[in-house]
Length: 409
Image (cartoon, rainbow, N blue to C red; front, side, top):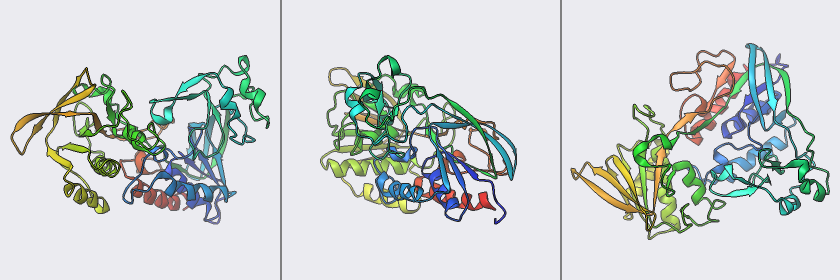
């Protein structure tokens, strides 16, 4: 370990990549941390809270951002991706492509640019439920804390209003894409996950009905900084839903879609149900499941849900969802196995517990049949957390800490 002079590369700035980078740097090794978005935080930063403690994102990430700021051994590339890896353990050459940074680090996030910007863009952070200006602060915990520009929607010099009002000369429309090669000792691949495309599950009509949403979208709907500003609102009319249905294994454990179990979906829906009840004690919630898979400290969620008279656990598979056009409410038809019959339930909002799918890392690397990175076939490259299999936040952080040790050995 004393002989390591080249930096260690961490690909992915979600909570697991951040954890690995900090752990490596705090034992005295140089780290390069690469993130494809303009900000660190990954999926966790978008959540309302996460288990087992139901912490908001600020609880875990703010202290890690502080540790990064205090550690000069960590070099960060945002809006950047790895396009190529060559070499072998101890001697990798990595090609990094970085999108143009039209907003420089001199930005103070004063907001004057937003006030004059005439263009809008769909807000990816809120899963496109709303819009922002073409120059925007990704979210209030953004790290780095500066504005960014969506090149697809910004008219740049043809408009130039943001540059005209900026007192710190932080706008640079001449910025270009950069490609550079770096040499690193080893690599931690924290390329993360995305939700399975629910539009592929034909009978659940995710693409057709506005009030059918995925579980990650629901996180943004109920979050204090989400669409409703501390209120839970449904997408179609911004009304607060009182009858909510959760559909477990939406596309998972299904040969037509995802044949595997994503491990965290049951705990996530139980968490969501408890969050709704805390916010709206009179709400009525139904959770349809094949079987409930919770483990460890997350079993407490199941005990709390079973004790709540306003949350009903129904063993059975949802066959189809229909929309009542006058109200945009939803009719959920499902089999109730314990009663031995099909039933219909009306809901204001339906939440699909869609599974975890690995992100495409963007470079050549061995994968298994599901697209997750293989740990035994990539010597010197250490896949962690949801890049190698579905995990919850707590398990991902532990796995990242273990990978940090492997990366420096």
